[in-house]
Image 1 (tube, helix red, strand yellow):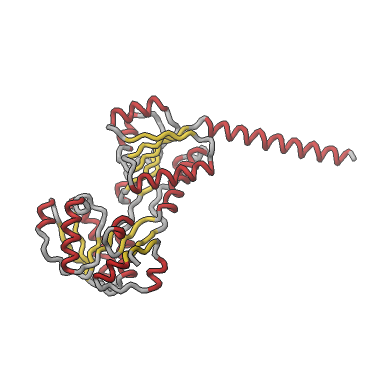
Image 2 (image 1 turned 135 degrees about the horizontal axis):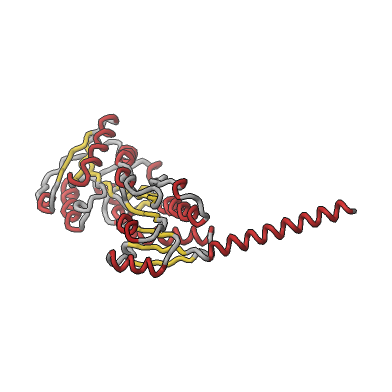
Length: 311
């Protein structure tokens, strides 16, 4: 009987300790604030923020989350100092290095399309980079998978910003029986001057000059005239006329970003939290455009696509 009483007391003690720990953990989370600084409220930026919020609500429901739109460095720094957050999440705005110099030692999680070389320049004791960048070899691999008959792949690019991307594409092409046809452009006039592509397919890469509205209008018109399939860089491209679009899996990516924030909320050392690149890729097919350009896409490719438009 005495042993039973002792065991019961131990059980109640354990329950009490667990309850105390839970209350303490919740209190610690309640006292923490995440400040999201976004470039704007459109497209993928809104998708990432909403997905990350949903993940954080599941893991830390009492975490305070505030959200502002970037409005110049001075105003943003003033807002940060007033808010005094425990963690900052930057989505689509490259101001981390400015914040490091003008704020307290606040951990910064970054969601932006940084290449590996640039991502590694952020101090690991202050910043965790969750890059949106898809390696060019990955884009080429999907191009080969989806359009296996395309041997000559055209790439229009600004050499000042993306020569390294094209070099990576050439390395992949050389080892997989493909050829890269380069179209370096330095300004809008160079793009408007392109009148013959003569390629099997055109691979778009994230390039602000090439992917501007005016540039794309000319490029798409040229590809329509030559019946050249385009491989776009986001779902929107497949919706609006490219045969294929290659994008990150935003659900999986948002979980990566949320995992970085969760680790900081749980007080894990920032140096133990790795920077990441997309671990999962989605692709989209415009079946109507493929048919119009006489591009045959295998049934298994259509079946595995995230979405198929124009069926």
